[in-house]
Length: 120
Image 1 (cartoon, rainbow, N blue to C red):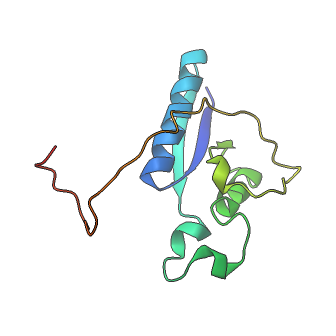
Image 2: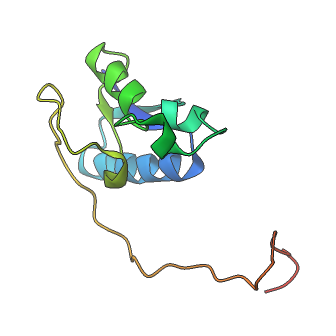
């Protein structure tokens, strides 16, 4: 049986989103083997300046697109906010997952720099 390699950024959020997509695929096709392949993107590596100073497009997808095109992965999972406006015709958008509740928010007191896990 062929294993489908799913490309994802290494960030915890990207991995969770990719695992949710993989769970959906498994539910529809339990016979399919899936493997998560994570990688750092240019956007993940640039920590010393704001991304608007870099001036590039697709900073969070370039490496994943390259891996898809050269066969290192079979599909990739992205947040729509990371996709450039111009689509590469070689890489179709094949599906979208269900949107989660957008009302999620974290409010901290002014000046808070970290959370105290002992307090609710």
